[in-house]
Amino acid sequence: MTRVFDHVIAVIAGRGPANRIVPPSGATVWPTVLAAGAMAFLAVFALSVALATDRLADRWADSLAHSATVRVTVAPDQADQAVDSVLRILAQTPGIAEARALDQQEISQLLAPWLGAELPLEDLPLPRLIEIRETDAGFDAESLRLRLSAEVPGAELDDHARWRRPLVLAAGRIRALGMVSLGLIVAAMAAMVTLAARAALAANRQVIEVLRLVGARDAYIARAFVRRFTHRAGTGALVGTLVGMSAIALLPGPAQEGAGFLSGLGFRGAEWLLPLVIPVVAAIVAFAATRAAARGALREVQ
Image (cartoon, rainbow, N blue to C red; front, top):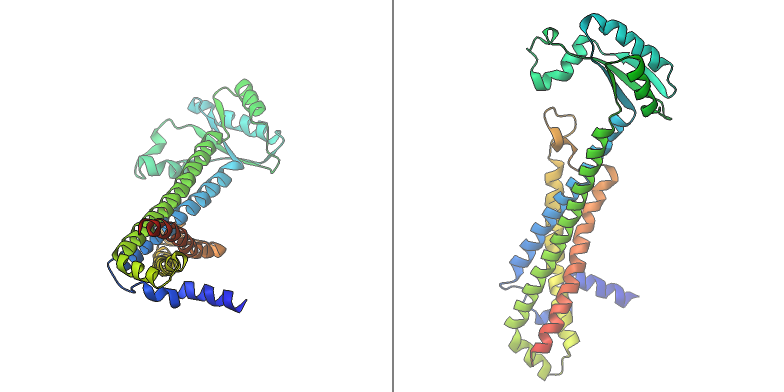
């Protein structure tokens, strides 16, 4: 058990007897570290965007899931009577917890982002709006829609289903894009480490030949390169992850006005532990890529 532990520590630290045959510096050192750090930095942001999209879609969907709106479009002299009739129908409908008519000021606030706050909305023929709050059980939207159309012509129910569906679809697509981005980052890191390992093996061709002459096996030589490049990629990924997490932490918080979607970016609670998996994944990818590259390159070196 002690030998296994020492072996793991040697791989992480990039030291050990076998590692001495790999030059600690060279043309592939900093490109490997910097590329791994950049990939990890991008992976942190891709993960953050995927999680933020899920939270935003859930928040919007929850706010729309238990609410509905009735729009009453009738002549101005019939508006009050029509609104009273709709409120009476809603009060008799099972599954509706509360229904209230929005006043002119509330309607103006809803339209201000699109029409401007200075527009005299009282001069426009705006429909009357009634806000509905459902119970947990909900109500039969189709039956209510049919009753409203029969008893109050001009009243139209909007249960917000058409708003929820695009949100769920968009969130699913962005989440899928985030996962694809993470997969591409892993693939790019594997390709980068493979190229760097092959370049290092080619540059040390003479060293490898001498080692073979003195009896070193290919497994011993490959293990040295695997440890060295796993250490480099893991170190770069760890630094990139920490920098990415710091950048995410500096983004505007939910309490800051005008932050918009940026206020949702970031990690919440235990989600801050997820980016710490990135350096581990980077080290595993580097280990597998270097091992495959070393075995292939050593077969070519005769």
